[in-house]
Length: 214
Ligand SMILES: Cc1ncc(C[n+]2csc(CCOP(=O)(O)OP(=O)(O)O)c2C)c(N)n1
Ligand SMILES: [Mg+2]
Image 1 (cartoon, rainbow, N blue to C red):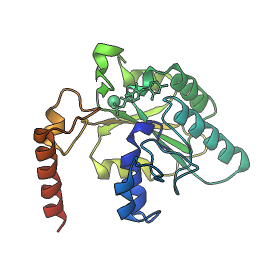
Image 2 (image 1 turned 90 degrees about the vertical axis):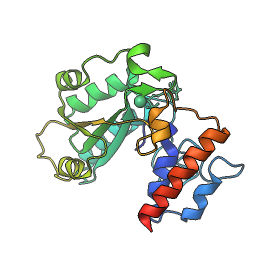
Image 3 (image 1 turned 120 degrees about the horizontal axis):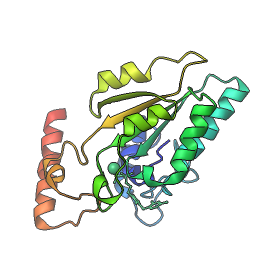
Image 4 (image 1 turned 30 degrees about the horizontal axis):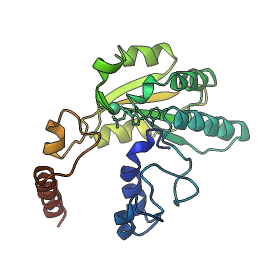
């Protein structure tokens, strides 16, 4: 569940690699008639469980799914990614309280703590203060890891928790645009205007990545 629905393209790439649709279809992103609109739409795309993009709603849907699995005695697990700017939505905190209250430990929440949101630094817009402390106070078993530390993430995500365990939440200490030095260095890369300079920098990164995977 991608609660920060504006990151749809990242989810589409993963779904394509997993075989939900052809990789070639990724280039239709946002075009008229595409099955891949910038924000996920469950009626358009195979593998998308919920329509998201209105921030705060995805985590609430994830909580409902997890409760439904639990009530029905199903072993299914739910994974949900929430943005750190998304946490400005009060709805998120209602959902977190609900998740903790119902011990929905079949739901694993990831917070993409990239310290930035749409139009600037988190601290300048609405300071989230001590995220770890807040989630702990809300009843979660909180883990903070580097966003690209795959072995650490697997170690946290794989184990199925005991029925009475506190729900688990992972704060991903991440960098917006990570892996693309041009984007990492931009103050705000939420929207990107394609100029000669940015096009050149992005093409160079794509070539480097392609060379790495050849
Ligand atoms: C309810 C709602 N309010 C505002 C927006 C506009 N909006 C889209 S992305 C975004 C920033 C979200 O920040 P964050 O979750 O940190 O995502 P990041 O920029 O790090 O990808 C905002 C405010 C929205 N999509 N939904
Ligand atoms: Mg952010």
